[in-house]
Amino acid sequence: MVVMRRKYRKGSRVRRLGRIGDLTQQRQEGYTLGWEHGHWLGRCEAVMQQAIPQSIVRPLHVLYVTSGKGYPYSPIDLAICESLKLVVAKVSVAQPNQDIVRIAAQEQPDLLLVLEGMNTPVEKVYAVKELGIRTAIWFTDDPYYTDITSELARAYDCIFTLERNCVQFYGELGCSRVHYLPLGVYPVAYRPRNPSVETRGDICFIGSAYWNRVSLFQQIIPRIAHRKMLISGLWWDRLPNYRRYRSRIQVGAWMDPISTCEKYNAHKIVINAHRAHDDDTYNRNRFRIAAVSPNPRTFEISASATLQLTDRREDIEQFYVPDKEIVIFENAQDLANKMEYYLAHEEERREIALRGLYRTMKNHTYVSRLNQLIDLALVP
Image (cartoon, rainbow, N blue to C red; front, side, top):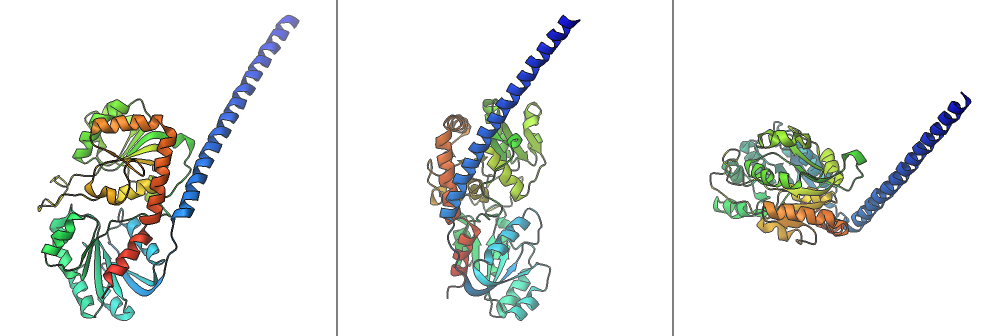
């Protein structure tokens, strides 16, 4: 019995030492990982501090009319409202279903600014103009709904569109003051973050499964299946090989900006695939206006300090330097090759992400956009 007890004690001691060794290794790995993530976040915050310019508050009053559509437009409304407070001395906010004319008559703002405008009756806009108040609209979905926006644009003194090809389009409708102005980022929502370890991965895409995106991912998923990837958004169960990869796909998910940003932060590469301008399944663009300008996601991904791989849009080089601040892919094969390359070249990937972050925070926030908008809308 004594011999057996000694053997048991010896085995217990070995197991205890093994567990201690495992815990020591895990503690060391956790320390190393924590230091790495903290160091990266520190680098990002340093870039942010260098990039964000000082705001100049103008002695002006803006009456802002929200989209009135709720989510996903409500985060844009919030971003614009809060950013306007950093640009002008007074901001009043109204909903499309309110008595905008009465509010404008009482408040006498320098500018009435409407977002998107589909829920704002044009009769109200004309009545505000009769009060001698300048009016402007910022279209958020060009060129995909130009069948509708073409009926709204004439009511406003000044048009802002996020699609360069729509500038000429609205001009030909008789609108005399039309400006190209993409949406921006709201740094309170989109910024570097430190997501939990269990959410981290290699490759991410967030967005609805329009048919051109389905075609792209049908080709690339088998080539990157060995990587930890996440696809999230509406309609992804229409992907032909969905059942095989469904553990990596969140169907029907619609995340708020902070949750989206956390997913971007958690992945080394985020894919941006623009929707097609000629997909009649979803668009109301009978004029077939081609889309050449970057979508809002372009700025949101780069604001999250992750490497963005985007399909080509003609205007993107106005905003980012390819291969320095952003990476452009030409087709599915090129995308797959570039993902493998940048996952194997960690420091190069991070440097591009940092430069993209700097460019975004310096030039592409809503404060920057609204500075331009106010100057253009109120110029005599």
